[in-house]
Length: 622
Ligand SMILES: [Zn+2]
Image (cartoon, rainbow, N blue to C red):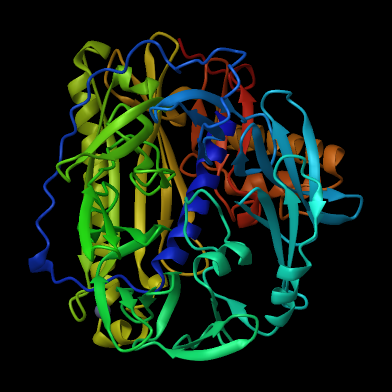
């Protein structure tokens, strides 16, 4: 349980970080009238199949030499494709540390940061899926980015100390270092400038573009000497040459080649193409992210804020060679599915004629591909690799309510709420209807109070002038069904988690664990289960929190808590816990008291979980 929740939260934070960057600054303004009302949508879900995870053979067959592999980063899985572009074999790297950065034939390249003695260093390692041997390739004090190009693995790091790029080259078969002084000279000449588009796109197969690739494909690189005021960039071909005046100040350069530079408008986040001379056009006003740029074809996604939480993603391609823009797919996110996947955007990979991405169908998350057919239509099909099943759907289905608050002065979507709720199948309990009403009402009330809070906060127009148009002004509340499971014979727990952001540096994780008595349909809390006094509860939680701190001090030499010592942790926990300030996951033999960030420890420590055996509390759940 613990691992799963923390993993999910980490993923959320990561995703949010990425979204904030790729979205640039502001969401486009859309008047409320343009946006279709979002009805409360009931998602009908057929029960998940009883066979849970799709298990692969324990010893997968080695992939053949011509195969191509897809990386599902957050699932830590690499799927090799067969000659028909379908899933052939999948390797699960859940038990390996480091980020999966690249796949070169039988080798998977990992980038892992770790302490070696007293310095933190990043290591690039090649793991061979056939021989199961790992080989260290390179290490750097700075984060390492990879690009496998033309038989060479380029590893690049950028030092913020001296603003200097280092690019090392290795033979992509032996991983022996080879001479790269020619390209390193280019990098040395770049000192003082920032290379644009060195990390072109999210989810692309390579996570960095080596200078060799840029020069081979484009003939020059775009560089800037001021990355804040991005209205002038320079062409660089060994030395800074011609300046390019962008017609609109750029938020970020997304991609470029000989013919066009594609970038986002700093003020509006519109996606713009510019031919380096005088012609430019707004390609999309609602761009969410640019995913790939391959052979003169740009791929990007668009999301309407009105679909917040239940994203209906439009995927577009623009082919420079034909001048044609196509809507190639419209995958949608379904209630109950993982938050770490933006359908159509996560995993987006172009290979040959096909585009691959991760999405869900309301019962499972899996890899899909888009195959262009002869009639210029696009066929979308699963490739046969399921990444996640959702066992809790055996108990019912997930529904949701959502709403967007538009600023009355500028019409920006400034408050976004998405709240899921679970609906039990009738056969789970004779009181299913009663439980479902409680859950649905709670979801609606949570959403209404969030939106109402936004309405009250907006106040007069000065707030709009000061904050809107900047991405950090967008507040949100997401609440998702995380898990549903029975406890003993007579109880069911519906676990929710999500995040709330009301401004400031970061969002806050939110959660609730809703335990119901199936024989009565009543929600059950600590007051019903614990027969002791509030004082007894305080002591029990404080004692176990102190134990946790002592274990941490024993293991690491320090604890994550604010308090300097275990006694201080006891005191803080004792003061924090009350019957009302008590949230717990109920298991078979113990409960896990869950304490939010800032209550006893800093934000970085995350949610504190304190396990307490029922025997200590005199609780019995059966
Ligand atoms: Zn406004």
